[in-house]
Length: 283
Image 1 (tube, helix red, strand yellow):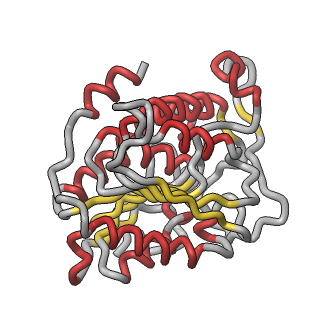
Image 2: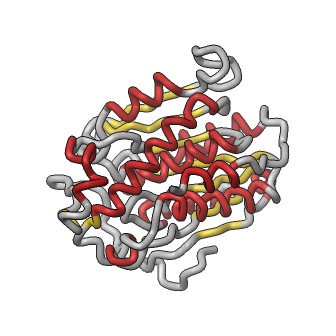
């Protein structure tokens, strides 16, 4: 079911699906400095219910922070987009999903392709630290910083590699990814399900506020009739909620979301408009 024989090793995960739900694809993206291990229980839950699931390991992840510093946001999004397109090509309705930065990547993908829907957990679109405004300059004077850590975390720990430091070059790339995802929000017309932890010290509330304000507003300046936005507040979990107390709620509610909207999605071949857009935004 997974590409790794060791469940504790960061690796891509894929499952072809079985039964009636095999026609429904779900591509899930992990977060910044994380790996598929942070969303593996979610992926396995969906696979057990017959959905076709794909979770790529993003470039620069699952190894060490030096490797991450050599990659960019277009590399991360490109790896996920490739996984989505492959899965969409063999399913009738294909969804995108993600955790944290993976939520931004999922939303960006939905803005460029005809996804059946989007399910994101604590999606990142903004930062708490105001110094990120000058990160493009700061990265030349300070190579790394200490990663954000939650006090008394309740989520299960994972061994994602050596990310004891966070390269500021990668944070700069993260900022650019968020900017691209924000620009794409008005183009999204697919239904969106957002899970938001009340106790999230990594992603600020402004991320959800911007998502609500900009989602699907491209044509009229107001929310289009095609899409919908549903928000589920998680009372008992921190940032990595897919490994935390509220994980069962996320798994069950997202499965219902996928099943419901797959039944109303007119299966179609995903568009290929993203290639030129990505190329223009790499610089």
